Amino acid sequence: MTNQTIKLGSGLRQDNEVISVMRAGKLRYSKPNKYWVESSHKRYVPRPEDHVLGIVVDCKGENYWIDIKGPQLALLPVLAFEGANRRNYPKFEVSTLLYTRVVKTNTGMNPELSCVDESGKAAGFGPLKDGFMFETSTGLSRMLLSSPTCPVLEALGKKLSFETAFGLNGRCWVHAAAPRIVIIVANALMNSETLSGTQQRIMVEKLLEKISD
Image (tube, rainbow, N blue to C red):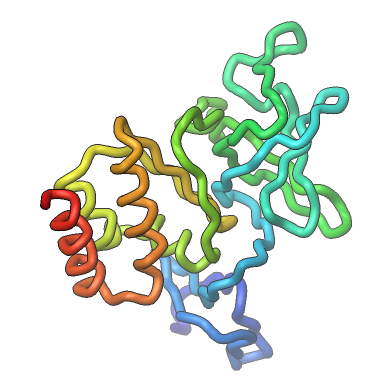
């Protein structure tokens, strides 16, 4: 690939003309030119532009302190919301679940989050009300966020009505009108990590057969 520049992400290292793999996992590629090795971990390492599900643990001064399953708590400025100002900003209780975006990560410092996109719009970020949150490996979260839609979500979506939010930090949120739908979807997602696409579809069919009996 001498005619273009490539970007190396996590798990890859370049030494002169040689690119080495630094950990076990799947080699991934995203257009136009980025490569990385995707591994499945329970521990999450924050990176800028990651979308994560965080839990409010405290509010001090002008920042919310958020648990994102990383080595440190993250900071979410109270002004990092669409339309927020010093007199008027969202108030959250401890344990509130938020869908947020990582904007800064510096060694030795707490990561910084935001609930707006680069244009200052909410774009789906903010509190996730009701529903059920469960924790997974980071590998499963990445699979569920992949494009095109992974088979387990596609199969469930054809038969059931529900909402989801997935964080790259290994947290998933599911909401539906009926609790049994939430349970079915959550179980299907948790069972799908080690299954092929075909196996995911078969597993969903069997789950749906049980509730139709």
